[in-house]
Image 1 (tube, rainbow, N blue to C red):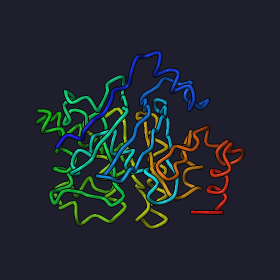
Image 2: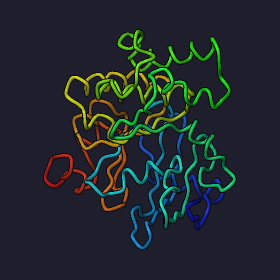
Image 3: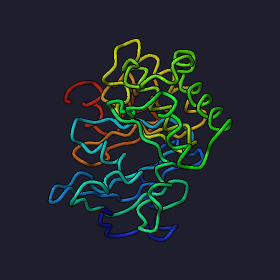
Image 4: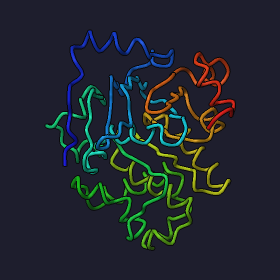
Length: 278
């Protein structure tokens, strides 16, 4: 079911004025994602309240804030995952690469190829390692030696090839938790998306696996725009170029990550990053 939509993004000049109110220095880079006055309701419950945000191209943007503040809801707007939830209503809009993703004419399958998503809990298919990574490529018509090459390339980029090169025919569910998460990243990256959405991608992993995922994110920023939800302040500080703080569905503040953690403008941000509330 398509999420109901109340309004579009408005004239370009009007959009620019709105975006200027939330632009950080990091967004002087080319823009990949533009979100303006985005609100979302699950039935009568409002989860997002007029959120406006610019996400620069090929950088990591961290979304932080207490549980239930709307971080995951915001991610799911960008690849229309909220469409799968009955009773969802959306107003405002967001663009990825200049395309209004809320437009009813948008091909959602193609959108999700452009905007991949990595969930908190790894979700490999109950198939072989190879077939997991090849899934989206086959849908796109890739086959034969090209398919084999692109699967291998995706596994290398996910820092997994050396660990599974002799296990490609093995069921992916037999991999460790950290390997499964990197496999899901390889599967998303195999179709060469523009954006990777990551919803707490390392929260369920052991410290060694967390380190590997963080190293991978640092490498992936060279090729992808990454929007990442995390509850770990140190992780946001280590990995992100800019950080956005949400509270009760509102975007309170967005800025360069070093400023968010050293000189936040809003006292609510300071209270959150210093641990005064969670």
